Structure formats: structure tokens, C-alpha cells
Image (cartoon, rainbow, N blue to C red):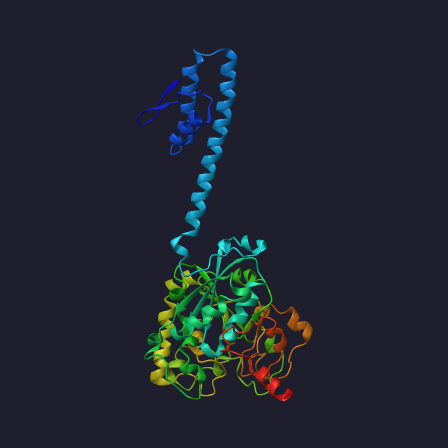
Length: 426
């Protein structure tokens, strides 16, 4: 028997000299139509039915109708399967994922983590070679305390990138999403006066936070965290911090923080503007900023990058960096990092506040425990700002930090106190 049917573009003939119901005939029919849509295949089957209607008995027509219904079902199923397959291929080959490790397509990812959807939460963190273990611990604590779609933007220098990748590709961090961003120290030329007494002045990555829109160009909002913190809460709560209209960032103020309520020997003016800026300088006095104004800590903050760009915050920060090189505007007894003074000037009474429990700091100010275990447990973020880092010889609550630390597979980075303990054991 010969069947002839019309397609949308041409006439096509399938010849079956065997019985109409034989497998070769149906195979030719389906194979010939595979590239066409479901609607065209329905039309094809209707044509076949009409061509046979006058040539067969009522019983045979019913049988044919049943067979055609089965074939139609298989065609629809096949069409949907091809559509799903194409979708998956497009997702996997999405060029926007270059430089990332897409979590949803990592075969070893736990099922509970595959469904990390919602909007992307960009977290920016610096990664210097001598503190790389801190960066790893921060990322590990953030990743395992949230089900949100976190993407880490790790700012580092060229000579550290390979070491960082090898660390991230091992252990429990191999399924995270991240992008390594190379920071060019040339950006700081003429803006930083190298001072051997100020360690931060010779560490360019300290200033990476000033360039957030360049580091995360397509985001409207981002979180910045230092490498000496541990996150114990869901990072989404920090990301959802409300910022007032016109505010480009939210910080934790020193005077109002829970950390400030603990007495610190020799703290002096470290919680006020006068502890960071030299009010003897005319340029500072002309700003009409009260010296007693409470300072804030820039080690953890949430940024509205749209406002940041509209207000040209990066340019303003660079301006004050240059002026400091020329006029030495910062306090000679600087209470904190040299990144703080320009931020205090630019964001004077123009910033929102984050929950104080999202920056419980000064854990690195002394080797002793200044907070109760209950308070430390309740904190959303612990910050070891100060000289006593948790990977060093001694630090308060170092055991909590070490819980999130992942040993370096290359052996380049190791905990200093571990060497001391091993030496003492011998």
C-alpha cells in the first residue's frame, strides 16, 4: 500500500509494500517526521486516517484510530523529551557562567543544595596569600549556614590565584559558586603613602572594598566581609538589611554595638571620629564633622551598588586617599585600619546600620575571652579584628573559628599554634 500526505513545505511519500501495520512502515513514518512539530504530526496522522477511511471496514478503522492515538502519544512524549534535553544543554553551556562553578550541575552536590535558587547574593572577600586560611574559613561558614544562592567574589593577586583554586577545588567547598577577581595594585598609585608602622599601607587588597562596583559590575547590592570573620547566621538576613533612601551602605556603628559595651583598656577614642582623623588639620575642621561622632567598622557592610555608582563613592574615597598622601589627614594614633578614615568622611551621617549581632568584633584585641560563651554562640558574625588572629599563636575562641577551617591541601598554609603545640609535645 502507498500512503501520500502533504506537509507544510512539500509533498512527501512513504511507500510500504508490506502490511500497513508492519514495524518498517511505522518506523519510516516516524523517522521522516521527527524534525517537524507536534501540530504537523497531528495533521499527518489525520491525513492518513482520511485516506484510509473509504478503503477499510469500520472495525479496521477503529483499530487504526487506536494505533494512531498511541503513535501520537509517543510523538508528543518524544517532542517534550527533546525540548527538555535542549534546555539542559543551554543551561550547562550558558556563557554567563564562565569563571563560576554552577552548583546545580555539579554531579556530587547534595540534593538539598541543588535547589539553592532565589536571587544571587554576591559576597565580596579579599584573599591575600598570608591570610588565605581565613578566607577559606569565612566562605565555608557562610556556605554551610544558608540555603541561599551565594556567589563569592574573591579578590586576590595574580600569584595567589592558583593556590586559591587548588584549595577551593578540594573538600567541602568544591560545590560553591565563585569568581576570582584579580586586583591591580596600580589602582592605588599616588593614593597610599607606604608607612612601615601601618601594615595595611603595604597590603593593596585592604582597599578592594573601595571598588565594589568594579568587582561586582552586574549586581545592585552586595556584602563585603573581612577575612578574619566567621558567619554563624544565615547570610540572607544580613543581605536583607534595609538601607534608607539615598544611603549607599550600611555599617555597624562602634558606639552602639554590643562589642562596645565591653570595657577595653586603653581604648581611648577608638569609637569616635577623633580616633581616626587629625582635627588639627584645617581641611578636616572645614568638613564640620563632630569629633565625638561615633565611628563605624568597615570590616562588614552591605552596599547598595546602584547608589554607590550614582554618588560616585569610589571617586570620593580616592580623592581623600590622595589628599591624605599630600597632607597627612589621618590621626597619628590611628585607632584602626587606614581604610577607615576615608570611609568615615564620605559616609558621615549618610549610612544605614546593620544589626550589631552581625559584627561582634574585637575578638582579636586580646588573647583572653572577653565575651561569655553564651553571647558568642548567639552572635550572627564573629570578627577577630585586632592583632590576635584565630590562625595565630593565641586568640580568643579560636576553637570556634577552627571548626570552619579546611586544611590546605598544598601544605603552604598552616595554623601557627599547631606548630607550637607539636613542638611542645616533643
